[in-house]
View 1 (spheres, one colour):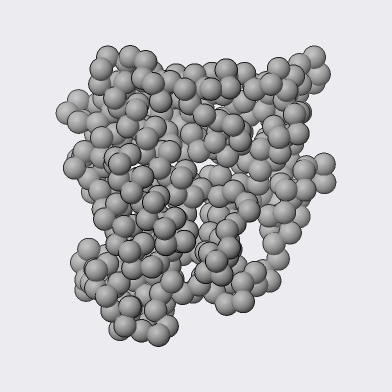
View 2 (cartoon, rainbow, N blue to C red):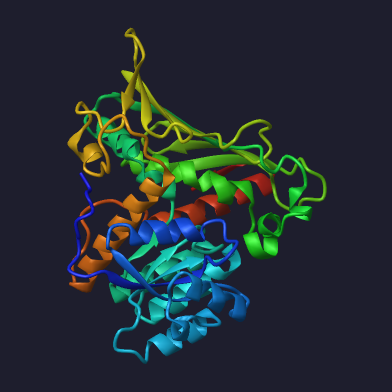
Length: 385
Protein backbone atom coordinates (compact mmCIF):
# COMPACT_ATOMS: atom_id res chain seq x y z
CA UNK A 1 0.00 0.00 0.00
CA UNK A 2 1.13 3.54 -0.76
CA UNK A 3 0.86 5.55 2.46
CA UNK A 4 2.72 8.77 1.72
CA UNK A 5 6.19 7.72 2.84
CA UNK A 6 9.05 8.98 0.71
CA UNK A 7 10.21 6.63 -2.04
CA UNK A 8 13.22 8.68 -3.16
CA UNK A 9 16.06 10.19 -1.15
CA UNK A 10 14.91 13.59 -2.38
CA UNK A 11 12.26 14.80 -4.83
CA UNK A 12 13.21 15.35 -8.46
CA UNK A 13 13.50 19.03 -9.37
CA UNK A 14 10.77 19.52 -11.94
CA UNK A 15 9.28 22.10 -14.28
CA UNK A 16 6.18 22.38 -16.44
CA UNK A 17 5.81 23.72 -19.95
CA UNK A 18 2.19 24.71 -20.47
CA UNK A 19 -0.48 23.68 -18.00
CA UNK A 20 -1.26 27.21 -16.86
CA UNK A 21 -4.51 28.92 -16.03
CA UNK A 22 -7.34 27.46 -18.13
CA UNK A 23 -5.45 24.30 -19.05
CA UNK A 24 -7.58 21.15 -19.17
CA UNK A 25 -4.82 18.92 -17.78
CA UNK A 26 -2.33 21.16 -15.97
CA UNK A 27 -3.77 20.64 -12.52
CA UNK A 28 -3.88 16.84 -12.69
CA UNK A 29 -0.20 16.82 -13.73
CA UNK A 30 0.77 18.98 -10.75
CA UNK A 31 -1.46 17.21 -8.26
CA UNK A 32 -0.21 13.78 -9.31
CA UNK A 33 3.48 14.68 -9.47
CA UNK A 34 3.57 16.40 -6.09
CA UNK A 35 1.48 13.88 -4.21
CA UNK A 36 4.10 11.33 -3.13
CA UNK A 37 7.11 13.61 -2.49
CA UNK A 38 8.49 12.40 -5.82
CA UNK A 39 8.74 15.74 -7.61
CA UNK A 40 9.26 19.34 -6.56
CA UNK A 41 7.86 22.03 -8.87
CA UNK A 42 10.59 24.68 -9.00
CA UNK A 43 10.19 26.32 -12.42
CA UNK A 44 7.99 26.59 -15.46
CA UNK A 45 6.93 28.26 -18.69
CA UNK A 46 3.24 27.96 -18.01
CA UNK A 47 1.61 29.98 -20.78
CA UNK A 48 2.20 31.23 -24.31
CA UNK A 49 1.55 34.69 -22.82
CA UNK A 50 4.63 35.37 -20.60
CA UNK A 51 2.91 37.80 -18.22
CA UNK A 52 -0.06 35.51 -17.73
CA UNK A 53 2.27 32.54 -17.26
CA UNK A 54 4.36 34.34 -14.64
CA UNK A 55 1.28 35.47 -12.75
CA UNK A 56 0.00 31.90 -12.71
CA UNK A 57 3.36 30.46 -11.61
CA UNK A 58 3.53 32.89 -8.69
CA UNK A 59 -0.04 31.97 -7.72
CA UNK A 60 0.97 28.31 -7.28
CA UNK A 61 4.13 29.11 -5.32
CA UNK A 62 6.87 29.11 -7.96
CA UNK A 63 9.72 31.60 -7.54
CA UNK A 64 8.99 34.59 -9.86
CA UNK A 65 12.57 34.44 -11.16
CA UNK A 66 11.96 30.88 -12.33
CA UNK A 67 8.72 31.60 -14.20
CA UNK A 68 10.04 31.85 -17.75
CA UNK A 69 8.47 33.26 -20.94
CA UNK A 70 9.11 30.13 -23.05
CA UNK A 71 10.73 26.71 -22.95
CA UNK A 72 13.97 27.84 -24.65
CA UNK A 73 14.57 30.46 -21.97
CA UNK A 74 13.62 27.93 -19.31
CA UNK A 75 16.25 25.44 -20.48
CA UNK A 76 18.95 28.08 -21.02
CA UNK A 77 18.51 29.81 -17.67
CA UNK A 78 18.08 26.63 -15.65
CA UNK A 79 21.33 25.25 -17.12
CA UNK A 80 23.17 28.08 -15.34
CA UNK A 81 21.96 27.01 -11.89
CA UNK A 82 23.51 24.46 -9.56
CA UNK A 83 19.99 23.47 -8.52
CA UNK A 84 18.67 23.28 -12.10
CA UNK A 85 15.66 21.22 -13.06
CA UNK A 86 16.11 17.51 -13.72
CA UNK A 87 12.78 16.77 -15.39
CA UNK A 88 10.08 18.58 -17.32
CA UNK A 89 6.44 17.87 -18.18
CA UNK A 90 5.20 18.94 -21.62
CA UNK A 91 1.51 19.87 -21.58
CA UNK A 92 1.31 22.00 -24.72
CA UNK A 93 -0.65 21.41 -27.98
CA UNK A 94 0.37 18.37 -30.02
CA UNK A 95 2.34 20.16 -32.72
CA UNK A 96 4.92 21.39 -30.19
CA UNK A 97 5.67 18.07 -28.46
CA UNK A 98 8.46 16.86 -30.73
CA UNK A 99 10.58 20.01 -30.67
CA UNK A 100 10.21 20.53 -26.92
CA UNK A 101 10.84 16.87 -26.07
CA UNK A 102 13.93 16.80 -28.28
CA UNK A 103 15.26 20.02 -26.76
CA UNK A 104 14.68 18.70 -23.23
CA UNK A 105 16.51 15.45 -23.95
CA UNK A 106 19.39 17.33 -25.57
CA UNK A 107 19.56 19.45 -22.42
CA UNK A 108 19.87 16.28 -20.32
CA UNK A 109 16.41 16.31 -18.77
CA UNK A 110 13.96 13.52 -18.12
CA UNK A 111 10.57 14.12 -19.74
CA UNK A 112 6.90 13.47 -19.08
CA UNK A 113 5.03 14.20 -22.30
CA UNK A 114 1.39 14.38 -23.21
CA UNK A 115 0.59 12.14 -26.13
CA UNK A 116 1.39 12.15 -28.97
CA UNK A 117 5.15 12.40 -28.71
CA UNK A 118 5.14 13.68 -32.29
CA UNK A 119 3.38 13.17 -35.61
CA UNK A 120 5.82 10.96 -37.53
CA UNK A 121 7.38 7.57 -36.84
CA UNK A 122 10.77 8.90 -37.95
CA UNK A 123 10.58 11.62 -35.30
CA UNK A 124 9.50 9.11 -32.65
CA UNK A 125 12.42 6.82 -33.50
CA UNK A 126 14.77 9.79 -33.25
CA UNK A 127 13.47 10.59 -29.77
CA UNK A 128 13.82 6.94 -28.72
CA UNK A 129 17.47 6.85 -29.83
CA UNK A 130 18.21 10.18 -28.17
CA UNK A 131 16.66 9.16 -24.84
CA UNK A 132 18.46 5.80 -24.84
CA UNK A 133 21.80 7.34 -25.79
CA UNK A 134 21.57 9.80 -22.90
CA UNK A 135 20.11 7.32 -20.41
CA UNK A 136 17.03 9.48 -19.85
CA UNK A 137 13.47 8.49 -19.04
CA UNK A 138 10.49 9.65 -21.09
CA UNK A 139 7.07 8.95 -19.65
CA UNK A 140 3.87 9.38 -21.66
CA UNK A 141 0.68 10.24 -19.84
CA UNK A 142 -1.61 7.41 -20.79
CA UNK A 143 -3.18 8.20 -17.45
CA UNK A 144 -5.89 5.53 -17.37
CA UNK A 145 -3.26 2.79 -17.22
CA UNK A 146 -2.46 3.82 -13.66
CA UNK A 147 -5.73 2.37 -12.36
CA UNK A 148 -5.13 -0.68 -10.18
CA UNK A 149 -7.55 -2.94 -12.03
CA UNK A 150 -5.43 -2.60 -15.16
CA UNK A 151 -2.63 -4.34 -13.26
CA UNK A 152 -5.10 -6.98 -12.05
CA UNK A 153 -6.15 -7.63 -15.66
CA UNK A 154 -2.49 -7.93 -16.69
CA UNK A 155 -1.78 -10.45 -13.94
CA UNK A 156 -4.86 -12.51 -14.81
CA UNK A 157 -3.59 -12.87 -18.38
CA UNK A 158 -0.03 -13.63 -17.25
CA UNK A 159 -1.38 -16.34 -14.91
CA UNK A 160 -3.56 -17.87 -17.66
CA UNK A 161 -6.91 -17.13 -16.02
CA UNK A 162 -8.46 -16.32 -19.40
CA UNK A 163 -6.78 -19.06 -21.39
CA UNK A 164 -5.64 -18.28 -24.92
CA UNK A 165 -6.42 -14.66 -25.87
CA UNK A 166 -8.68 -14.57 -28.90
CA UNK A 167 -10.39 -11.17 -29.13
CA UNK A 168 -9.73 -7.66 -27.83
CA UNK A 169 -12.51 -5.12 -28.20
CA UNK A 170 -11.53 -1.53 -27.45
CA UNK A 171 -13.50 1.69 -27.56
CA UNK A 172 -13.23 5.30 -26.49
CA UNK A 173 -16.43 6.81 -27.80
CA UNK A 174 -17.84 9.94 -26.19
CA UNK A 175 -20.38 12.45 -27.50
CA UNK A 176 -18.79 15.76 -26.50
CA UNK A 177 -18.05 16.93 -30.06
CA UNK A 178 -21.38 15.93 -31.59
CA UNK A 179 -21.84 19.52 -32.79
CA UNK A 180 -19.26 22.02 -34.02
CA UNK A 181 -18.39 23.23 -30.53
CA UNK A 182 -14.88 24.09 -31.68
CA UNK A 183 -16.32 27.25 -33.25
CA UNK A 184 -17.08 28.60 -29.78
CA UNK A 185 -14.53 26.84 -27.57
CA UNK A 186 -10.83 27.76 -28.13
CA UNK A 187 -9.71 24.85 -25.92
CA UNK A 188 -11.30 22.44 -28.42
CA UNK A 189 -10.62 24.30 -31.65
CA UNK A 190 -6.98 23.22 -32.00
CA UNK A 191 -7.94 19.54 -31.76
CA UNK A 192 -9.77 19.85 -35.09
CA UNK A 193 -6.96 21.67 -36.87
CA UNK A 194 -4.33 19.43 -38.53
CA UNK A 195 -1.74 22.20 -38.16
CA UNK A 196 -1.89 21.79 -34.38
CA UNK A 197 -3.47 18.36 -33.79
CA UNK A 198 -1.64 16.42 -36.47
CA UNK A 199 -3.08 14.03 -39.08
CA UNK A 200 -5.88 12.69 -36.87
CA UNK A 201 -8.42 13.79 -34.29
CA UNK A 202 -10.17 10.93 -32.49
CA UNK A 203 -7.79 8.16 -33.57
CA UNK A 204 -4.91 10.01 -31.91
CA UNK A 205 -6.80 11.89 -29.22
CA UNK A 206 -8.81 9.05 -27.69
CA UNK A 207 -7.99 5.86 -29.62
CA UNK A 208 -4.41 5.65 -28.37
CA UNK A 209 -5.59 5.43 -24.76
CA UNK A 210 -7.33 2.02 -24.95
CA UNK A 211 -4.61 0.91 -27.37
CA UNK A 212 -2.04 1.37 -24.61
CA UNK A 213 -4.33 -0.33 -22.10
CA UNK A 214 -4.30 -3.37 -24.38
CA UNK A 215 -0.50 -3.19 -24.65
CA UNK A 216 -0.16 -2.93 -20.87
CA UNK A 217 -2.60 -5.75 -20.11
CA UNK A 218 -1.47 -8.16 -22.84
CA UNK A 219 2.34 -8.53 -22.82
CA UNK A 220 2.50 -10.03 -26.33
CA UNK A 221 0.15 -7.50 -27.99
CA UNK A 222 1.80 -7.06 -31.40
CA UNK A 223 -0.08 -5.89 -34.48
CA UNK A 224 0.51 -7.73 -37.76
CA UNK A 225 -1.78 -5.67 -39.99
CA UNK A 226 -4.74 -3.32 -39.69
CA UNK A 227 -7.60 -1.70 -41.59
CA UNK A 228 -9.13 1.66 -40.68
CA UNK A 229 -12.13 3.68 -41.78
CA UNK A 230 -12.55 7.25 -40.58
CA UNK A 231 -15.04 10.04 -41.25
CA UNK A 232 -15.97 13.56 -40.18
CA UNK A 233 -19.72 13.60 -39.59
CA UNK A 234 -19.86 17.26 -38.51
CA UNK A 235 -19.60 19.46 -41.60
CA UNK A 236 -16.47 21.55 -42.29
CA UNK A 237 -14.24 19.46 -40.01
CA UNK A 238 -10.89 18.65 -41.58
CA UNK A 239 -10.21 15.72 -39.23
CA UNK A 240 -12.29 12.68 -38.37
CA UNK A 241 -14.71 12.62 -35.46
CA UNK A 242 -15.36 8.87 -35.78
CA UNK A 243 -13.19 5.89 -36.74
CA UNK A 244 -13.20 2.10 -36.76
CA UNK A 245 -10.05 -0.03 -36.78
CA UNK A 246 -9.65 -3.81 -37.21
CA UNK A 247 -6.33 -5.40 -36.28
CA UNK A 248 -4.86 -8.86 -36.70
CA UNK A 249 -2.24 -9.65 -34.07
CA UNK A 250 0.87 -11.77 -34.54
CA UNK A 251 -0.41 -14.12 -31.84
CA UNK A 252 -3.44 -14.98 -33.99
CA UNK A 253 -5.84 -12.88 -31.92
CA UNK A 254 -7.98 -10.14 -33.44
CA UNK A 255 -8.64 -6.67 -32.07
CA UNK A 256 -11.09 -3.90 -32.85
CA UNK A 257 -11.20 -0.21 -31.93
CA UNK A 258 -14.03 2.32 -32.04
CA UNK A 259 -12.84 5.88 -31.50
CA UNK A 260 -15.48 8.58 -31.57
CA UNK A 261 -16.41 12.05 -30.39
CA UNK A 262 -20.01 11.92 -31.67
CA UNK A 263 -21.42 9.06 -29.58
CA UNK A 264 -24.47 11.00 -28.40
CA UNK A 265 -25.22 10.62 -24.71
CA UNK A 266 -21.94 8.94 -23.83
CA UNK A 267 -20.02 10.82 -21.16
CA UNK A 268 -16.71 9.06 -21.78
CA UNK A 269 -17.27 5.60 -23.19
CA UNK A 270 -13.82 4.07 -22.77
CA UNK A 271 -14.00 0.29 -22.41
CA UNK A 272 -11.79 -2.69 -23.08
CA UNK A 273 -13.03 -6.27 -23.25
CA UNK A 274 -10.57 -9.14 -23.56
CA UNK A 275 -11.92 -12.57 -24.53
CA UNK A 276 -9.98 -15.75 -23.98
CA UNK A 277 -10.65 -19.44 -24.51
CA UNK A 278 -11.76 -19.87 -20.87
CA UNK A 279 -13.08 -16.48 -19.72
CA UNK A 280 -13.47 -12.78 -20.48
CA UNK A 281 -12.71 -9.58 -18.60
CA UNK A 282 -14.05 -6.08 -19.17
CA UNK A 283 -13.00 -2.70 -17.74
CA UNK A 284 -14.92 0.57 -18.10
CA UNK A 285 -13.20 3.79 -17.09
CA UNK A 286 -16.41 5.31 -15.69
CA UNK A 287 -16.37 2.47 -13.13
CA UNK A 288 -12.60 2.07 -12.78
CA UNK A 289 -12.62 0.24 -9.45
CA UNK A 290 -14.41 -2.79 -10.90
CA UNK A 291 -13.29 -5.45 -13.35
CA UNK A 292 -15.93 -7.76 -14.83
CA UNK A 293 -14.77 -11.40 -14.85
CA UNK A 294 -16.93 -13.86 -16.76
CA UNK A 295 -16.07 -17.57 -16.94
CA UNK A 296 -17.98 -19.62 -19.48
CA UNK A 297 -20.65 -21.71 -17.74
CA UNK A 298 -20.40 -19.84 -14.39
CA UNK A 299 -22.22 -16.83 -12.94
CA UNK A 300 -20.68 -13.50 -13.91
CA UNK A 301 -18.67 -11.81 -11.17
CA UNK A 302 -17.20 -8.38 -10.51
CA UNK A 303 -13.75 -7.97 -8.97
CA UNK A 304 -13.34 -4.94 -6.69
CA UNK A 305 -10.31 -2.71 -6.22
CA UNK A 306 -8.45 -3.34 -2.97
CA UNK A 307 -10.00 -6.75 -2.30
CA UNK A 308 -7.77 -9.40 -0.76
CA UNK A 309 -8.46 -11.89 -3.56
CA UNK A 310 -6.63 -9.74 -6.16
CA UNK A 311 -3.07 -10.48 -7.26
CA UNK A 312 -0.39 -8.83 -5.05
CA UNK A 313 0.80 -6.67 -7.96
CA UNK A 314 -2.69 -5.15 -8.19
CA UNK A 315 -2.73 -4.38 -4.46
CA UNK A 316 0.70 -2.73 -4.38
CA UNK A 317 -0.65 0.70 -5.30
CA UNK A 318 -3.63 0.81 -2.95
CA UNK A 319 -3.93 4.25 -1.39
CA UNK A 320 -6.93 3.46 0.79
CA UNK A 321 -8.66 0.28 1.93
CA UNK A 322 -11.16 -1.66 -0.16
CA UNK A 323 -14.61 -0.21 -0.63
CA UNK A 324 -13.50 3.38 -1.00
CA UNK A 325 -13.53 4.65 -4.60
CA UNK A 326 -10.32 5.81 -6.22
CA UNK A 327 -10.32 7.98 -9.30
CA UNK A 328 -8.27 9.40 -12.15
CA UNK A 329 -6.09 11.53 -9.86
CA UNK A 330 -5.04 8.35 -8.08
CA UNK A 331 -4.25 6.66 -11.39
CA UNK A 332 -2.12 9.60 -12.54
CA UNK A 333 -0.39 9.69 -9.15
CA UNK A 334 0.54 6.03 -9.56
CA UNK A 335 2.05 6.76 -12.97
CA UNK A 336 3.96 9.83 -11.80
CA UNK A 337 5.30 7.77 -8.92
CA UNK A 338 6.57 5.18 -11.40
CA UNK A 339 8.03 7.93 -13.60
CA UNK A 340 9.92 9.33 -10.60
CA UNK A 341 11.32 5.97 -9.52
CA UNK A 342 12.44 5.24 -13.09
CA UNK A 343 14.10 8.66 -13.36
CA UNK A 344 15.84 8.22 -10.02
CA UNK A 345 17.16 4.83 -11.11
CA UNK A 346 18.34 6.33 -14.41
CA UNK A 347 20.21 9.03 -12.49
CA UNK A 348 22.06 6.19 -10.75
CA UNK A 349 22.79 4.42 -14.03
CA UNK A 350 20.14 1.75 -13.51
CA UNK A 351 17.02 0.74 -15.43
CA UNK A 352 13.51 0.24 -14.10
CA UNK A 353 12.33 -3.38 -13.96
CA UNK A 354 8.63 -2.48 -14.02
CA UNK A 355 6.29 -1.34 -16.78
CA UNK A 356 5.05 2.19 -17.33
CA UNK A 357 4.01 4.13 -20.45
CA UNK A 358 7.51 4.97 -21.66
CA UNK A 359 8.95 6.42 -24.84
CA UNK A 360 8.51 3.09 -26.64
CA UNK A 361 4.78 3.20 -25.82
CA UNK A 362 4.66 6.76 -27.10
CA UNK A 363 6.41 5.78 -30.32
CA UNK A 364 4.02 2.86 -30.77
CA UNK A 365 1.07 5.27 -30.49
CA UNK A 366 2.56 7.51 -33.17
CA UNK A 367 3.07 4.55 -35.51
CA UNK A 368 -0.46 3.23 -34.91
CA UNK A 369 -2.04 6.59 -35.75
CA UNK A 370 0.12 6.87 -38.85
CA UNK A 371 -0.89 3.40 -40.08
CA UNK A 372 -4.58 4.01 -39.35
CA UNK A 373 -4.51 7.26 -41.34
CA UNK A 374 -2.63 5.51 -44.17
CA UNK A 375 -5.26 2.78 -44.34
CA UNK A 376 -8.25 5.11 -44.10
CA UNK A 377 -6.95 7.57 -46.69
CA UNK A 378 -6.47 4.75 -49.20
CA UNK A 379 -10.07 3.60 -48.88
CA UNK A 380 -9.86 1.46 -45.73
CA UNK A 381 -7.38 -1.06 -47.12
CA UNK A 382 -5.31 -3.54 -45.12
CA UNK A 383 -1.91 -2.11 -44.14
CA UNK A 384 1.08 -4.19 -43.04
CA UNK A 385 2.22 -3.05 -39.63
